[in-house]
Amino acid sequence: MSKEHEPGSGPEAALSTDQAIRAMLLVMPRVAARLKRTRIPERLRSFNLAPRHLSLLSYLLFDGPMPVNELAARLEVAPTTVSLMVGDLSRQGVLERRTDPADRRRSIVTITEDVETRSAIEAWLAHGANAWRRAFEQLTPDQRAMFVRTIETYEREFSGSAD
Image 1 (cartoon, rainbow, N blue to C red):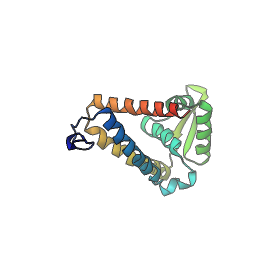
Image 2 (cartoon, helix red, strand yellow; image 1 turned 90 degrees about the vertical axis):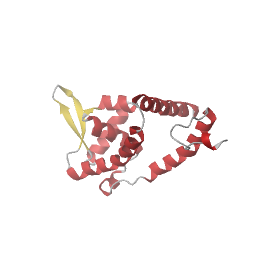
Image 3 (cartoon, rainbow, N blue to C red; image 1 turned 45 degrees about the vertical axis):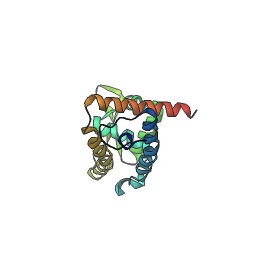
Image 4 (cartoon, rainbow, N blue to C red; image 1 turned 135 degrees about the vertical axis):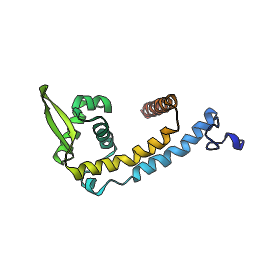
């Protein structure tokens, strides 16, 4: 393989399908290892948070309060799963449920207003968000969309092959 076509040899370097697969097979374990080593802020350590909580908290932080059914749809899990997660995090003081004034039968989930807990959640999510921001800023909107669709397809295909 010539140096000009090796992954990382420049932002405009083209990759064959096999070169791209090789590059991703090498980088993905490093990414996964870094994600596993991401330290949970001291304030949140006793809450037994897992990666699934990170996604739930991200939606609430970035998009604001929302009903359980909407969270479930976004997380692509059953509403009962989200309801259990929300119940657990509510008991721990991480989330709050409020009755929806427009429909009293429905509850709206939000991140707690406790400043220390909310700040710890923001700090926990900020590192990853900042890394994504730096990576995505150098791409065009079309390139960002293609990257996101590619990762979603990979995740879907990888999950399907594990069955």
